[in-house]
Amino acid sequence: MTTEMTMPRRSAGAGGPRLRTAIAAAFVLARLKPGRLRRVLARCARGARPASYAETLEVFEAVVATSRRCAGRYGCLPRSVAVALACRMSGVWPDWCAGVRAAPPFSPHAWVQAGGRTVGEQAEPADLRPLVVVTVREGVPGERGGRDDDGDGGGQAA
Image (tube, rainbow, N blue to C red; front, side, top):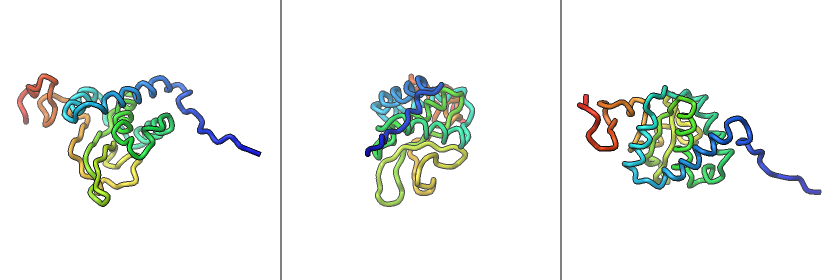
């Protein structure tokens, strides 16, 4: 006797096409150079409100359930970008981070944070060292890190 062992498709719900669009866009954006990716995400973050941990965790679980590549061990960059983009479609933005794991094994990593906590990660924030962070405030011209694509900085730095 055999039993079917397939995962139910979470994308069949109301947010399915939007979630799949965010995941597809994340795989395209993950191929950009780091500086360009940061600028694109900073522009996406503009006008959003900070995401709560619960909102971000729900989106994280939906992304992982929808995409095997995002759920995999080496899918951290597209997964984190997809979570951020899917959250933005709801009007919120988590802190998107790219950096390194501070404890062995040392390796590059990308993740999202909300409410000062890592979302969907086994590592604690102290175990990760962010090198690039895109927050809601970063999309505001004139603040540290908020730059336009033309590179003029969008105004005077504070």
